[in-house]
Length: 129
Image (cartoon, one colour):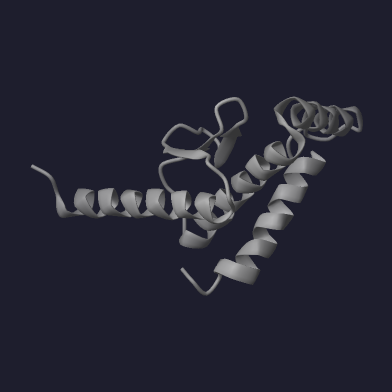
C-alpha cells in the first residue's frame, strides 16, 4: 500500500524533473536531466550531455541553483566544444592541485559556474519559485 507521504514525494520529484527540464530548455540546451544518479550534489556528464541530480535537496533554492550550475557547464561545453572544454577544465584542476588546493573547489570553471548560477537565480528565478 502506498502512503500519502510517498505520493507527495513522487509528485515533488515529478515537479522537480519538469522544472529542471524547463530550465534546460530556457537556456537553449538539449541536455537530459536524470535524478538519483549523482552521489554529489549534482554533476554534468560531458560525453552524454546529461545533468545528473541527486534524489533530494534541502530547499527549492538549493535545487534551482544546483540545476543552474550544471546548466552553465553545459553552456560552457556548447561554447568551447567537449574536447577543448575538458582540456581547460582539467588544466584548471591541475593548477589548483599544484597550488595545494582541492581540484574541484578551487577549479576556476567550478567557481565561474557557481557564481553564474547564484547571480542568475537572484536576477531571474528568486521570486518565481
